[in-house]
Image 1 (cartoon, rainbow, N blue to C red):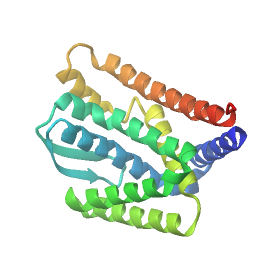
Image 2: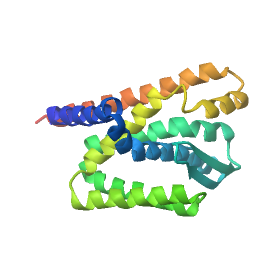
Image 3: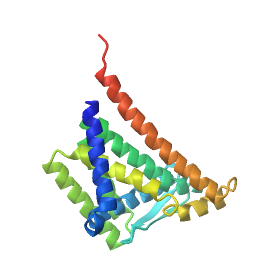
Length: 224
């Protein structure tokens, strides 16, 4: 089983790297909706940070160039700002873990993810593009889940894409959040927070991989 999991991991990673770095224009087009999904997870992280700390999300927007913005009211600003980068790292690792280890949870997780996209697009509406993308992606994902048995691979790919994207884009993607966070949390300058956030994202990924393969080893070696 561990060999099978490793092969699936290598296949998903190879597919992403192939599309990202060797796919050219076609690869970029295929990954375009995935990039927007990563933006969605980032903004959802801001939104969840707002709700958890007692604030209110006013709207979430995703732009065609991959940028995004969450407008909130109240809540703890430090958690809200960190929620984008760290939140998307957590969500990406959860998707990847479920795809890798929890076969019985996979279909339900895909359904929940689709429901979250539709809810965000309607309840936290900001633009036709964002709402149209989220609903269209949710419908497409639901159809693939309904008529194939690729739920686990879908979750692994989406989770891995989110994890790798935020790690490789750490010096660009969270720049506005980092600047605001450094101004809010004046303990360290922006560059220190940048590498602290990166370190947290990397550690989450390593812990997730350790948990995945340790669970596999435990399952494969029962005692009688």
